[in-house]
Image 1: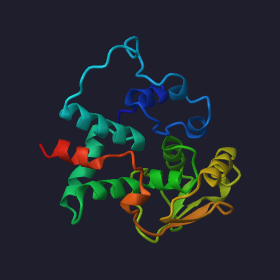
Image 2 (image 1 turned 60 degrees about the vertical axis):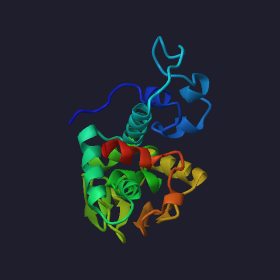
Image 3 (image 1 turned 90 degrees about the horizontal axis):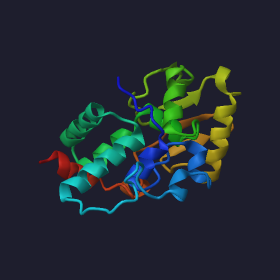
Amino acid sequence: MARYLDAKCRLCRREGEKLYLKGGKCYSDKCPIERRPYAPGMHGQGRRVKVSNYGIQLREKQKVKRIYGLQEKQFLRYFKIADKMPGVTGLNLLQLLESRLDNVVYRMGLAASRTEARQIVRHKLVAVSGRILNIPSYRVRLGDQISIVDAAKEHLRIKSASELAGQRGLPEWLDMDLTTFAGVYRELPTRDQLDPNIREQLIVELYSK
């Protein structure tokens, strides 16, 4: 599968806002978007042109893809599943993305970023209800317990990530104990508990054309 290997801070600058792709760096004054709040490239500070409705919808889709670290085919597959589910398609989409194992590991404070969470899962350092999994896209079910395997609990990266999570706070839909590196996916997040800067309706409109 293709992966984005360029500097992740360029993605934040391209979207014009923090996507929190680099862990602790995003919360510090070293964040590039704080110093260069314009698009990357030689024309990044150039004259802005008027963006069409389609362009606005496309940028929103690209932004959410980058936040969750997905490729186009993966993202489209999630949308098709969300569209067939009962309820509001946009909220269904966000809840599906939030239920990914790599995202849950990140949300629980076991990794400083989703990229790091994906690496931790790939290295078989995460167990779901006692079963070690190495599939970042695994869909976590309600009531599943997520934990770090005993051999990895002394890893400095995991410890520093939990400290950072303790400072920024943990989501309300998760029960997490940062001292044991274990938690429970208690309930699906409601819309008001998710990022208010995401305009999922624009993505629904884009894919509904």
